[in-house]
Length: 274
Image (cartoon, rainbow, N blue to C red; front, side, top):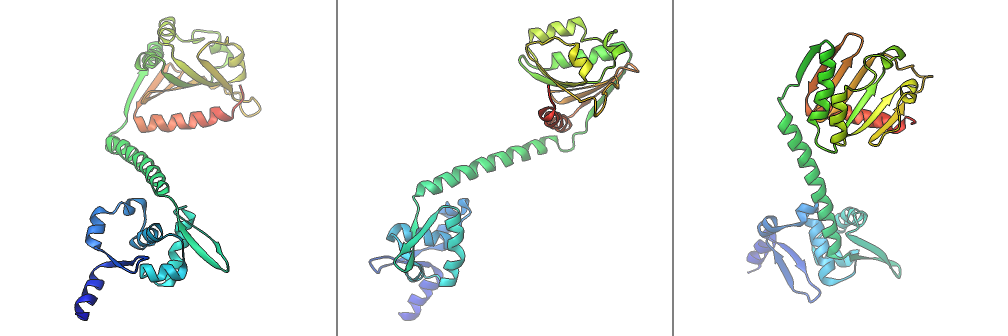
């Protein structure tokens, strides 16, 4: 009989209740149905928490007796549970007692973990969908090339969409043929109520009227005049690089590259002054 009981105790986890009865928790059953693993808790963490929930506050000696865990194991795992807010401790005379927090705390941890998992899976999904996809690069020359880049910008975006533009025109080009978007593109842009963030030089900023849907930041002239006659537009999954000096435009279509360029733009835009 003694040998048979020893076999059972070795095969199953035991918890001694307040009434002295032994509760047998089959490890195989626990593994299949254990939500605690989803919370990043070990079997010993679960045993400790369940014991405190079932029996109320306990000292380290009480926990060692009721859980069957060694005191050294409890001293190792309790600080981590306290740090996560799953268990709290407090004084009781000269001794320390441990108390289980409400299962609502575990529910909160679960929901936070769920949000993290969903975010990570979305990121993984994004990379999975774009893996192996090479950027589509389009090269055009002539004044129609510039018009095409502007036209593609305003027609590709949905109503109320946003694009990001660097503009480094000098005074000659600012007052000449490339003073602004072609009129047809301006009309489409305004009809679709497209929002735009622009980084440019001080002279370019002064030449522009304040318009609804347009926000401008300036590259300080003590850093650079920013008059290279090169523009870059980031829109949707595309990045258009326009060289006004040579009437050429290069468009790169790739979601990862576009998002990367957008993040850099937003970072710079945040710290530049209007």
